[in-house]
Amino acid sequence: MPDQTGLELLAQQVGDAVPDSVLGTLHFRGQATILAAGGQIREVLQTLKDAGFAHLMSVHGVDYYPEEPRLGVIYELLDRSALDRVRVKVRVTVDAPQVPSVTPDWPTAEFQEREVLDMFGVQFAGHPDPRRILMPEDYQGFPQRRDFPIGGEPVLFTKDHGAGDYTEQR
Figure (cartoon, rainbow, N blue to C red):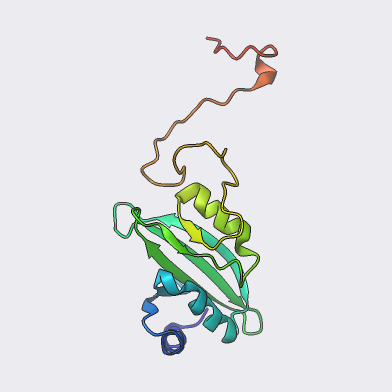
């Protein structure tokens, strides 16, 4: 991980290449994070790619409830030659949960963006296949949001019941 000084220099490099894209930095527990504007995420990641962070290791969602903007997307990049990692965080509101898809530049993000869409409801503009990946297409809600009701539907195990008999036994 870049140290605090290295993170600031990297953020300045990104800010110079993509004006108004860097909202801040965070260096916590050895993890370097750049807070970026959502609308410019493709340009930010491309700048980091040019700086050596050529591998997109993960894309995942997070819910900062009750804070606003509530939803976030985190991109984790790796520089294999320097063995450095940097995170890029983007925050979006529940009312407009949309960021540009990075799939055209980073093909490995395709399924990860679909998972974030499915679990958190963040939409990725320009995604080649924007449909649910884990939940049924007609499923209502986003299970990883913090305000999602705990419980859900009971799981039916056919090994415990006769074929086609799904009544609960007490």
